[in-house]
Amino acid sequence: MTVDGRVVGQIDGPGLMVLVGVTHDDTPEQARKLAAKLWGLRILDEEKSASDLGAPLLVISQFTLYGDARKGRRPSWIAAAPGPVAEPLVDAVVAELRKLGAKVETGVFGADMKVALINDGPITLVLEV
Image 1 (tube, rainbow, N blue to C red):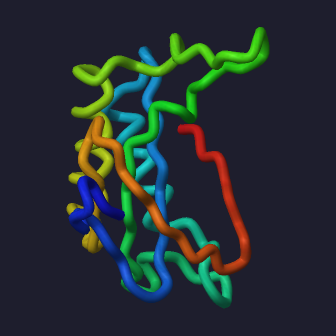
Image 2: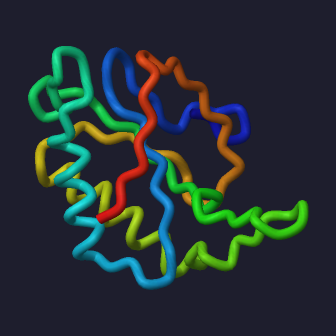
């Protein structure tokens, strides 16, 4: 992942790329639960988890997950929490993962990030806690 042409976060080998969206009523407790779920989720090769393999995680803040395009042609972002609410919760997910022993790389909150992904599977899940 790059910001302004500079690599700011990168993982190699099997691991998880995690897009974290925050809405207005999310809590630090949900951040803790999400981290535990991500670390133990058995979706890697041979039904192993990141914790089983010591696999790294790339955590990226992603307000657009809460985009609503049901009306018109321009999405509404009203369900996405503003930066001062969202950033500490994304940071909490990262901190909790690190407490669990995970190697975590991150993007830059609010930056225009360029993300490259090799999707082995593919598998994409929406986790709500």
